[in-house]
Length: 109
Image (cartoon, rainbow, N blue to C red; front, side, top):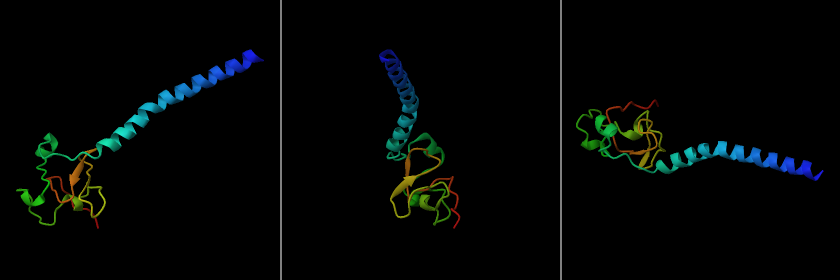
């Protein structure tokens, strides 16, 4: 009977180890996404530069609609009233709520 319980303990250990090793990359991905979300997109970022992103919309030369701000854009997923928030275009990074880029699309009311 002692041999049988030893085999069960070994099997249980192997199962738990396999589950842990399988879940570890997912946990790491979730934690790293949360940690990187605090980084602001710099205007010098290649994608930001290509889209003409400006942290201050008033400084954007190509902006024609004075109400166009990141906070009123379809791609912006930040909370109302916050100074910055996530943008679907710059995954994992924050943009200024008062910013603007050429990909701006008015958010449906």
